[in-house]
Image (cartoon, rainbow, N blue to C red; front, side):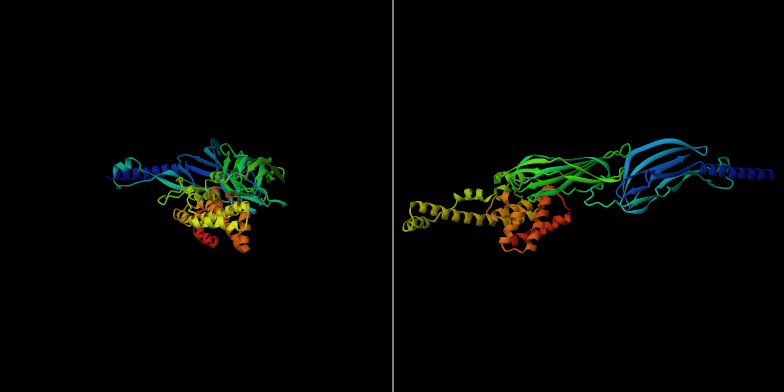
Length: 477
């Protein structure tokens, strides 16, 4: 009996030591660590840095996961390339994964790059004892597998970010740029017809940071930022790319126009000096055009269906209502009834004073004034309903064309003449204060941005719609 008890005790001790040895061996055989390095630790603000993260692992390692990397001092962009190789360290063979990131510093000074966080799991062998005298446990070494969840951090890095040298003009970019081009979708248009203008910058630098370049145009030209397109080659390293800026341009005066050369000034990080790229000049022919062609080009004249709640649904019949005064005069002239007594007065009264030729001219003048006055009054009366539809259907992109058509009717001019300069001079004649004029022109310009470029957030959209009635009532006084 004593021999049996001794045997069981010896077997239990052996299994305990054996399972503990396996457990420790399993844990020791797995290892994960990571290293981070940068290609340049002294840069100027806006100069991109390439960070390479190397992840080393060996043994039974599962579910390697790189936590989201954030750092408020840098713009961070993940590159597409991932490399994989094996490396021997201290006689141990490791699998190595390498991933690259593009970091653009946003703050001057000694900046610390936050460490990367790697999460992973490794198997852990545990002893599970169902009973001291359970022969199955004793014979199978107290088996059972679970996992340990672990975390490792990369090393921290420091970068000395220096300010750009002083420069007399605006600095557009930082890096190595080689091409700056301009293009338009058409070279011959009518007055105020929208032109799509593109500026394209190519090279290697802080493309993500570069904002809309300020254009150099004559005072009678108006432009609006539309959209941009960024293309960077980050598949096999940092190879640069291009960024295209789209604008909507309107020219408010007929004749030949030469768009002057546009400039892009950048700091060359290799030569440590400023350089300027220039576009070619572009020639445009601006024709006076007629009113119908102007409206057709702007796509201004479409009616809003009261039941239409879609932002993108095309409009169909607004053009029949908001039209040029000259066209409305011709169309309505045949529908107006001229009082018979006025004909008699026009014929008999001038005979006592004027000759035949003067009578004809006088009669035409009265007719024109009478017809135009009635037609103009009737036309202006339709705008209130149209504005109600615009607001009801939240068609903020229609506000710009609405005000152009209304102002053309109000001041009895061609729609092609309704520019910001014309509006300002007309409102001055109506005794508007300069501050009020500038306030309305800012509102008008914001409407144009939605009309041509569809830019702006929901708050701006709501503000424009909310103020539409206010400005219409002021203009209508």
